[in-house]
Image (cartoon, rainbow, N blue to C red; front, side, top):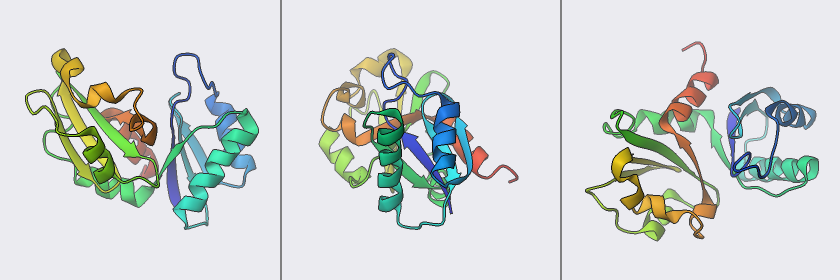
Amino acid sequence: MRYIALLRGINVGGNNKIAMSDLKQCFQDAGFSRVETYINSGNVLFECDLKDETIIQKRCESLIQDHFGFSISIALVEAESLRNMLARAPEWWGKDPSSKHNAIFVIQPYSAQEIVEEVGQIKPDYEKVQAVDSMIFWSAPIETFSKTRWAKIVGTKTYAKITIRNANTAWKLLQLTYPLE
């Protein structure tokens, strides 16, 4: 099966540095096949025969710890799940160029609904949010971004349970996963 490992908190502010070429080699050496990385934020596409996503997630996290010497969390997304979630994206997500559009991936064992509840009531004048399976679609105008409820979760316990990619990255990961479609 094809998976995407979304590493949380690497290559941010000079911390947890990993070269993508080293990351790719690490996954290949661990026996994963068709390994690709995309941009410096820690997106690894790969195939493996295991089907238990919890085991795969823990294996990937252990690889990072053993090979690079630090502990990070990983949101693991099966390729078909990503396709299904993006197919159900709300019509407002990713459209307005004057807004930020993020795909918030929830790290197991947490659920998108738990995260939405932890963050609390959104400020509808400033942001839109919709949970779909293990992803949360979030959009906010750039000029009022700092006023949103979701922009204020940095540094909270909730923030440690997610990893964020912008809409362009989410769509590109899908394209890389299914290149001929």
